[in-house]
Length: 270
Ligand SMILES: C[S@@+](CC[C@H](N)C(=O)[O-])C[C@H]1O[C@@H](n2cnc3c(N)ncnc32)[C@H](O)[C@@H]1O
Image 1 (cartoon, rainbow, N blue to C red):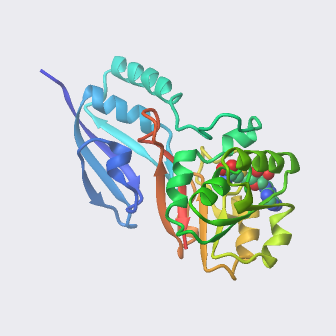
Image 2 (cartoon, rainbow, N blue to C red; image 1 turned 180 degrees about the vertical axis):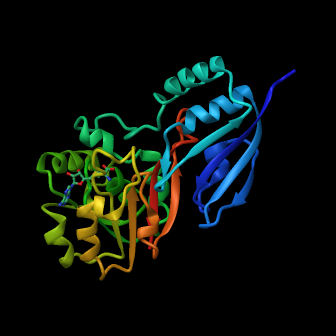
């Protein structure tokens, strides 16, 4: 007979798309601070898979606990972890077109996957956009492809040159004004319907809850951004959204088989 486990997962923020993260039938219970805890009846295989996938995950500054009753057989845990490690290598592609230039590791690592950047850009509404830290152009190019007029700022001259080249590869060079400089001194003079901020995440982004003071560049830019009507932020999965209560948070998942149940980043909209 198939052995069943009662699996309890939490805390999870109430705004999270739980269907996508858990990918198994479950019921939710509200916790005192407005978060939720979910429970599910799962086979050893399903439970081990879920536990492996959520192991060590800190989402929106909530370290996620997974409790299984009865405990999982060791063999199931071992094989689920091996399978999870294999799956982690199948991730949503950065740029999908040939001929782009990408610097390793920082540019590649911080590039917004093309499919996700396009999905977001499609919701901007063909407005003017200021991408204040454009990196290799992952988002700036997607905004331009979605019909936006884009101003893209980048501090690193070599990366900016790659972003410009990449915009040419995607045929949107004329729709992006590239500016080399420090967004902190430039932002006050920028005018656009939408400000997009994707700051460097720092080294501890995956391990602990990340709070606004942990991202001083983001904080400095937000202090200079009052004149923008709309602001979108792309932040690490562990970012504590409760420090920015006027923003609507959303978890963005991958598209590839290996990361479609993984939160790639948080998207906060004001
Ligand atoms: C997370 S990356 C942006 C990735 C980009 N959204 C993409 O998809 O390619 C952040 C970028 O901010 C740049 N940056 C850091 N400090 C900056 C500053 N003060 N002004 C402008 N850009 C800055 C970094 O060089 C880095 O390329």
